[in-house]
Image 1 (tube, rainbow, N blue to C red):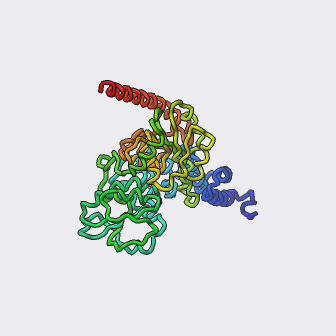
Image 2: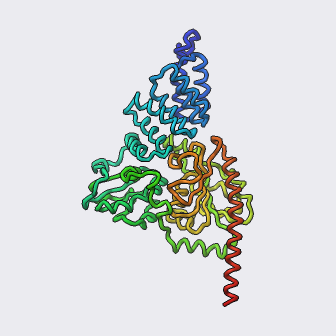
Image 3: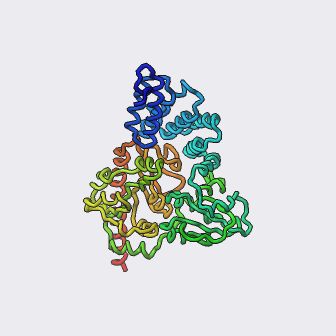
Length: 449
């Protein structure tokens, strides 16, 4: 053991060492251990502002936002020039659903460290969560400084500045996330107005679906060779290039087209369905190699058994749209049809979604897919919902067909699932009544004929 740590007469040095240890434990996502270490640090030295800041980070990741805010406050009362504490205080307030107050803290962080890309990105997310899209998307360009380097072939291609293309070829590419591409690809058909050629590069599971999108000269997978291109633009930068506001989001009623023959095949397989067909997705992709994404996935995903209140409802046929390891969680529920083996690409999923009456999903790519297809989708959203869903709303300007069910307590799915189950029961009853009335009307027409 280090002599400074062992020495009880040196509490400041012990606290500093413990603060570093707690920070390392936070980095390793060992938050319960970090809390114990950092709590000891601030007990030994209540003026250890670094320990208070790290303890605040621990509380943020445990979704204990009130505690986190208190810890950052203690840090800043001791050291008001600690930029990371201002930034992380802003993060905690954003996650607690207070983006306007968060912006005041993030402005202070940026004033102290104007070149800190992480602080600038956090400020962008607060602006976007507050609905200030012009400023938010402009600030969000700071994310490019935090991304892994692009392939050398792309880094040599100049960025598009939003000016007329004048016959040049523009490459639109993604940044990794399926959901991001599905949400923002709505802007790609609008690029025709700039007078150039458009090449869209996507991850292979999206290739066949997005090949039917209008206004694109070529769609290719990321693992295919690129043709010559003159300019490039990330799909996430398109809202900025188009000057998007809450009132100018395009194609909210839907913009993707499924393979209708395959969708009809699903409808025929179910025959004359007398009950509504409802799709379920309860977990996102874990992304264990990307720390922040993996932590967000823990907050957005739930285990299948949490959907038991839905499954207890009669006269509904459920279909699992879940892929990956979590798909096996539904194996013991006979009222759920498992389609994991049928869903090899997003085109497969789109055909199935197009045949369903409703999709219920957590905040993952399938929710975006259903909205982009214009299909009814009810989304379970974590307490610290993504910026794109704004705050205090149960609908979204991005998808007309989407309804949001947010957690009211961080980490607790009980309330949103219960509310969704109530609405599903009422919706199912209306669906059945309308189908019965339509059937009676059809029979009467045949009789009259």
